[in-house]
Length: 341
Image (cartoon, rainbow, N blue to C red):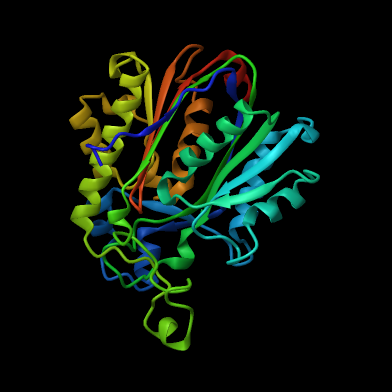
């Protein structure tokens, strides 16, 4: 993906008004995964990917429930009649149809605002942010953009390559017009990687059947972990640097990188290759796991609430995911956003 030219959007007068995130209450440790059937030890899991624990949704929670909680936190006590659109990025909707966003819209009393899902795997949050900024730039007053996933329902606890990686959660941003703080967004995809990480069954190519269930065809498959590792590193670095170059900036101008959280080893390699101090990269994967498209948004919400960013700080968000998809966004933090967090 490093040779590809991303699609850039440099909005004018568009800002992230507020953020919100939600993690389910249930904490699942590596030892818990062993009890569920994982064939790696707790220590082997931590050594391989740096994840010590993650959150799993409760049995009665679906993706829309997590999204509703994150969106409600982003909205706070603001007037909801100004929300003109709801976008939910997810690879684990409540149902094949309708869109999870419709459930979110109704639960939050957002009237007749258009509501729809999008799918961009682990780059979902930045894809949703890109769409939200474009909609505000072309006339919407405010757009609620959310990424939410319940990946735990699709984990094969006997698969050594994926069992320790994934967790559940949601993140949301309210995007509107005003003093701009979204400086630019970049997206790209490389479809040759469409089966690098995927769930084989349950769609139109291989519908659900007794056989697909028996063969565990509804769980996440990652056949070539080393290639996925390299693609994630390469894609996230390349698109982040491309966006900075387009804005005539460099990593020296960036106060913090807020990345997608695929695993700790990937983030360490990214920091090393970018020659960026790892202490200025927001990393929470050891306690959240990989929350798919929501992980970048969850990390952003945490970073804004951490007290480590000040008015004027430049924050570079980068993400790479299955498909392959990749996204980057540059945010100039302002006092209003910090106060809203």
